[in-house]
View 1 (cartoon, rainbow, N blue to C red):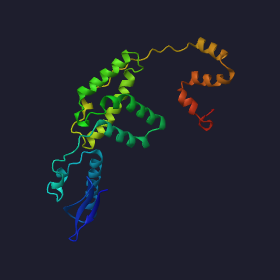
View 2: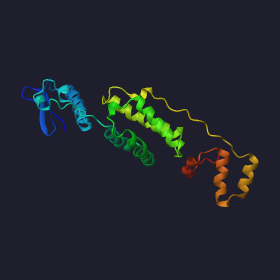
View 3: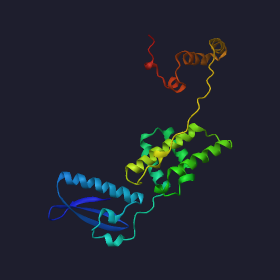
View 4: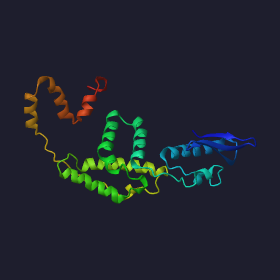
Length: 235
């Protein structure tokens, strides 16, 4: 873990491990709270890049005392599968269990098999469009995946590549040039009032109240099922 220390002259330096080597690099910054906050952000960036395999020693410390040890060891090519799995773990605390399960399933079934072994920065809009064509071909062969599900995949890719771009992991965001598919509206054929009356007369008695409320309030099933008695205003 990267840390900050002051030398005997009151200047700050950064210490961290890279490739099993303990590295200490000095700065020209005096030991002040503001400079410590500045270097703390740099430490976090170094840790993140080391974890992602994108750390370039010479870029951060062009005159560093340990720079010669890592010449020719530029940043490793970060694969999509490695970044995607880290991204998914970061998302988990902010997702409901079912949503996280859906993200994980999407990653396992569609995204990793197609993009997994590509270097993240090598993925461009052309490859993503070929991915869309691949999913459309699956749909044509009878798989249950339509425009809405394909757009769901693309929205996850938007989030993933935006995160990579914002962190400086990739120079360009390929999703900027990829549009969502047009989703056709499903046909709507609701019951008539006469059909509703017939249904309510014939439905099981223990379900009648549920469907009576459903028909005449327009509530969604999940909203109605989650409703608690204290939330009902009988007036």
